[in-house]
Image (cartoon, rainbow, N blue to C red; front, side, top):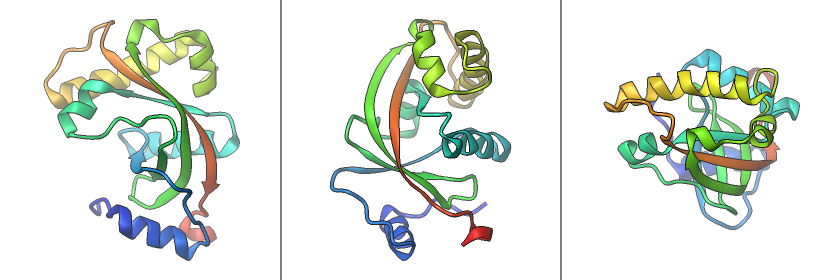
Length: 160
């Protein structure tokens, strides 16, 4: 698996596709912890169904990653570290896992869009993240709830 490219390299790749990023801080992100989950989540975004993403604050802190805030531009990578999307964060809020609302779960658009589905899927994902960073999952663990708008969808390499 290749290592993640630098922001400068990604901006250059985007430019080659005619994509110019708007002014503002630029972050790099990826979805999921497996190639299958990454592809599934990117597909939901590309279909227009998924307009939010949730991360575990503890994992961001452990990995030294910046938490996105409203107005930030994100270059979203696929599982092979290739740019797949460019998004702008509309809102970002850190809340306890057990306080995520049904409205937010519906915006995140995974599964049947229900809060029950969201909790089950995210508990499993955050449990894997907790294990990776040496923490125990708890119902009040802090999660980062980001709503975004899609600015650009990049063609898959086979479509380029």
